Length: 264
Image (cartoon, rainbow, N blue to C red; front, side, top):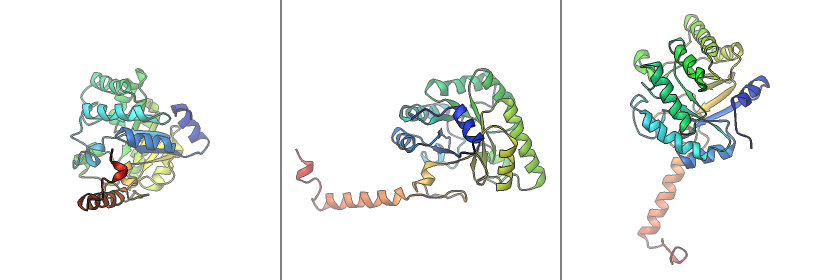
């Protein structure tokens, strides 16, 4: 299968074909996601919550993100791997933003994702100047939870909806090749999607987006500390794993495992 490219994603949008995206943080998971045929694998800073057990994404470091991106990229033969730029990896200065984004490409990513709209336009322009593809991200931006007072749906009133629509056009003009829309009303998601020429990837933004993304742990039932409204669980791997481990324990305790087949 051919590798997913920016041109492939734009072609899908223009032809009305949906784009699929998932997160992955390790080699075996990325290999499974890639084999399934997903278009985009995002190595999200969400690993801070679902892998590291943190309360939010803010403590995740560049070194941690690079480690996970490197091993995910090894597994991805078809999907486009994107690295999620963590908190303070791009905000302090343009030079830091370029250096850190470039490090993602050096370990195998094909682009980066950064949170923000008009406040990061100068960063998007600088990164694209150095041929670093940028996926923008507006709506609920997890790195801004303290400013918003938590994970609150954005764009519910006319004023904020209009502002998000403007932000989408601004990041497109700045050079972003795609746009994540998180935690906004469905009609606004559809309106933004129709207003920009770049693909929109929704997460809690309704079915009118060009594509959808979920955290793999949510989709497979591997994380249940909390479940956002936009999540649909397609499997319960946690329960299956617990059952398998209990069977293993019982066989060990009763002298069944290892048996003749597992002995030299």
